[in-house]
Amino acid sequence: MSAQARGVVLLVLVTCLWGSTFAVVKTLGELLPPPVLIAWRFLIAAVALLPLVAWTRRNAGRAPRAPDGWRGRSLWRDGALLGAWLIAGYGTQTIALQTTTANRAAFFTALSVVLVPVWLVFAQRRRMPALLWTALPLAVLGLALLSWEGGALVSGDVWALACAVTYAGFIVTLERMAHRHAALPFTLVQVLSVTVLAWVWAAIAAPGQLWPPAGAWGPLLYLGVIATAATTLMQTVGQRTVSAAGASLIYALEPVTATLFSFVLIGEQVGLRGALGGLLVVAATILSQRAGEGPPEAHPEAPAVQVQ
Image (cartoon, rainbow, N blue to C red; front, side, top):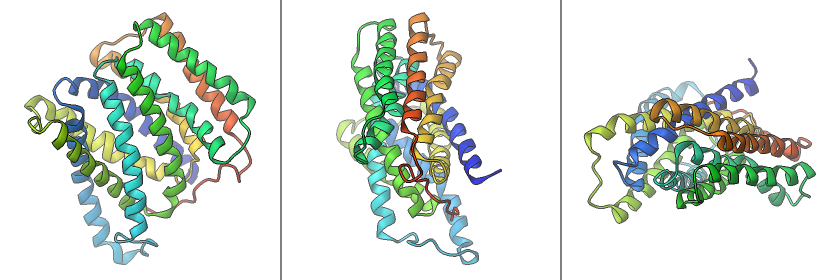
C-alpha cells in the first residue's frame, strides 16, 4: 500500500470515529458544561499520549532526530496556533450540541468541507471556479432543508456554522504545517495547547463544576483516548500525504456516519426533508472538491515524515 493510500485509510477511520462523537458529546452535554467537557477530554488525551511519548524518547537514539526536536520553538509555536483553531472548533461544536440535534449539527458542521476550497481560493488569490459557485448555494439549500425539518433556526445551528468556519481554518493550517514536524510531538503540543486553554476557560466559566459525575467518565475516556488522542495523531499522519482538499472530501463522510451513530446510540432520526438536505450538503462537498482540483503547485501535498 502506498503512503498516500495509507493516508486515505487513516483519514476515513478518523471520519468514522468523529461521526460517533456527536451523539456522545450531546449526551455528555447534559452532565457537564462545554469547557469542562473539553478540558477533561483533552487532558485524558494528553495522558493517553504520554506512554507513546516515553517510548519514542527512549528509542530516540536508534533513529535520526526530527529537524526541530521536542524543544524547537517552531514546534510549540505551530502547535499552539493549531491548538487555538482546535479549541475554537471543539468549543463551538460542543455548545451547538446543547440546543440542536446531533445529526443536524453534523450536517451543519460539514459546511467546513465546502469552505476549505473557498478559503484556498482567497488565500491563493485565484478566481473562484464555476463549480464552487454551484456548490455554495447547494450547501445553503441543504442546510435550509435540514433546519426546516427540525423547526426554526436555533442558536445551536449558528454555533455549528461557526464550527464549520473554524475547522476549515484548522484543515488548511494543518496542511501547511504538518510536514514541518514529527507527528507525535506535533500532536502532543496541539493537545496540550487545547488542554491549557480549556482549563482556563472552565475555571472562569464553571468553577464549581470542574469534577465530572460518575456517569460521565466512560464517555470521557472514549472521547479522550479514541476520539481525540488517536484521531488527532492519525489526522496529523494522514494529512502528510493527502492534501487539504482531498482530506476535506473524505471528511464529507462525517455527517453520514454521525447520522448512523445518532440513530443507534440515542435514537435520533432524519425525515424526508432532512435526508434531502443532507444529500444536497454531500453533493455540495463533492462539487466543491472538484472545483478545488488544480495543478500540483496549486495544492501541494505535504511530504511524508516518519513518526518519531
